[in-house]
Length: 623
Image 1: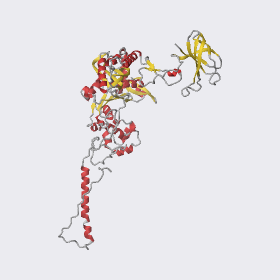
Image 2: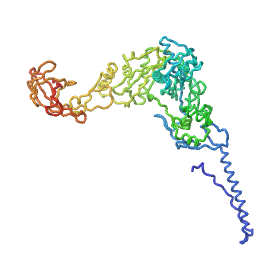
Image 3: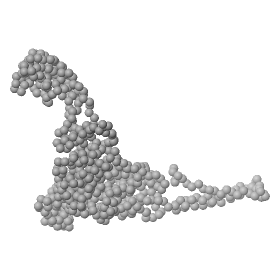
Image 4: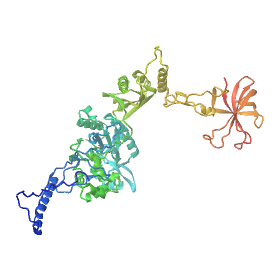
């Protein structure tokens, strides 16, 4: 039992002692006199109990996260959530919520600012814009609908304004809508292309914040969610930022409804069910969401219908119901269909992280242009200097760089480079983009350029050589970076020795830009050639059976007679890596009559049970 649940201690008045001069009552006093004193004490105890209860009931209780109740005589709601965590009370520490990487765990969850972008006619607006680009422009005033395959034939996916005014509705069968609107033109939608376009638009929306995510698609409508915490000051506040977003989307031919709120659920609801460009703070959150219908909690149609039948039509009605009742009624419901959980997410009592496809870069700079341009080369040196200054201040060096341009037509084009080791030299990083800027598709121009380092490593300051000489390792790394940027990452490779006694497995290659540690090179056994053929070349050999040395072989249509030989050197297969049935090898160092020396081997021997006639191969040549 908590301190608030304990009953107050009743202070009973002590019976007054008789005066010293008073005559004590006789020992044989009648029993009824002592019984007559009991009702007075009981009356005083009952009066004290009633006074304490009235004082407890009249004491105001702080409920900052729920709207005021309709009447004051309703029962107090249960103070525990369905998952067993107590609600926040005055003086009680707030439980730790799940936060993003790098955030303070004690930070108020209502301090975040999330912006929801609702595109109610995304599918039809994208189709109209695509038709206009192809020279087949269609007016929005013409009755046109997009259809997808349904269980009983094509159904309506999205429609123009004229079709909607004619009575065409989402999800209806095409045959029924054609009977209602005879002049209706029907085209088939492409949901896959719509999802891809929405994903590109999600990346393009990062011009306003470093973190964005797709907020789902429902029919022809779509949504985006942006984490704009701390980004609104660049546009003079949240109202100015929402006007900027709405104007930019209008230039793309997309109509949008926007809302900014401290939680993802509140932003989603206000963008779809509130006024244009709604801005909601933490203090006015309960008042703004209370009049919204219960479907604002992102519940399914069956759950919404059930709540309406129960008389709970708004979020405020649902919040006024005792929590224990909702917890019992929806104890077996899925988390996405639990009204109590959705209400906690909207009010910020339950964490709901933004599911972005990737983390925002830690080091990033940008350049906003007054008008669209075609070439980012003039702004690249300044961006490199600013990024390297940020890296140097944090003691890091860049291993990967990404140059991104945000086009005015809603597309995003990126270009990436890599370094062999961490670097924060702006001149060197700038040279990596030489001859590669032409790969960027400028489209109709871009007005925003960003340069970020998605991969950065610790780069401690080291002392240069005391004699003033050249740092060979640094110069080699810069050379590898420039060659890889010009020729491709796979064209520049370095040796990667392996632990194996098979000759071709001892020598490996990997891209020069690949990270990680490599094994130190080990000296080859004596008698091995410096050059190996990959793969070994098969030859026809005359030899003494079953395991005699080679006497003559034909290689590349030329007959070679063996003058001298040394061997054999037997190499067994690796049973832990090779397939069953792999045959052993017998290597020979031979010299022909012209003095040319080769390294050949016989694969298998007669009667080993792993094949027919042994095969011979030339595996290398000596200098």
